[in-house]
Length: 140
Image (cartoon, rainbow, N blue to C red; front, side, top):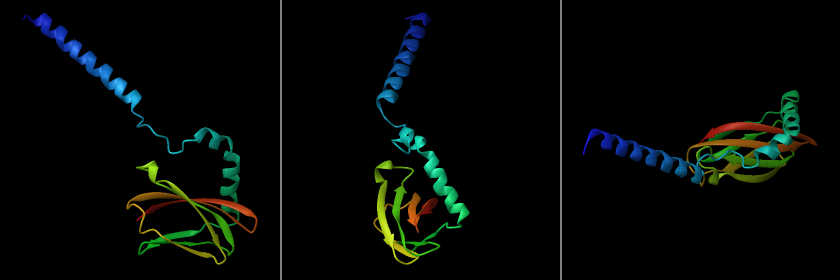
């Protein structure tokens, strides 16, 4: 076997490797977006912007802390109704949304059953008829 034949076999093996890697990447859905419905959400971003601007205008950003496997949220005023959206950056199958209602400015949620690690918490709520949205990064 001469060098020319070895080069042809080497290039052929390399081309087969590149084509199979390309087919694998196309068929395997590893490029998941954080939000599946990102296009629909972008169309309604004016509402999200208004909610975040209300948060700044009214100085209503809640304080969020985690102590002893319990999530503590303190709002600026009592009587809040909304939704807690937990997003796991490393695994979107763990994402969840939990509704909540409070009569006091304090809210507690046990998080001992949650997978340990980094979470992104989006709090979307209404307080006295005014809608708000707040984002927080958590680690527990």
